[in-house]
Image (cartoon, rainbow, N blue to C red):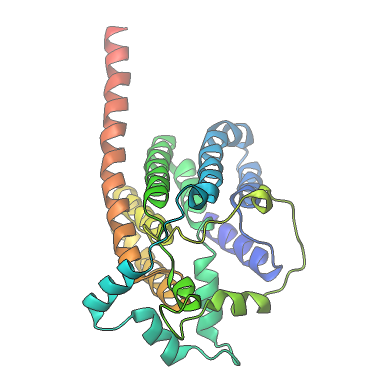
Length: 284
């Protein structure tokens, strides 16, 4: 029932042209808490998580202003070395037609913009399932996000579409500029994200890859082999990012590595927290 509710709410937001920002999506989750009669608990448990997530996005927005040395060539060289060609350029040459958008253009766009909906929905599922599982997930995604922010600050990297605009990858375009114009905008609901600056050179690590893979790892831990049902979505997101020109393959690989590292780190931190709680109970 929860999955059906979240899928229907997300589909409704996309259909009505409502951008899926964390603060907007929180109201969808709040409505869900009303349905299960756990609203007060939701506010107490989720307010810190949403504050951490929104604070990260605020910090990410000015990271590119602190380091103007944007890297273009490194990911191009690495992808070229791995595949003998640039996957983004190859995919766009084969499948993208600027004068006639196809179904996969729209599907890739939707997958890309579920970036915030996925971790919030999964966190909500864990919150319903077990508050300890939810809190452990919050630790993991918080560590991952802020480690990525430090990397954006130290090593800003341009995505493929920007490399295309600057002449490094001729023919590569930002497909989202064209596909988003076809989506309806019926309701422009308030969001603080209108006041946050985007960071166009935050390609490494790819959090669009790291978030779904981190969710996949936690799903394997808490739900076992049922999590494998989620793997086609993860692979679809990876392919979409490369095709849309938003990330190189190396960005995705590094994002996966970040998610693995901070998945295990969050486990160590959580075990330490639990040992302290146990010690407090035993020794007072």
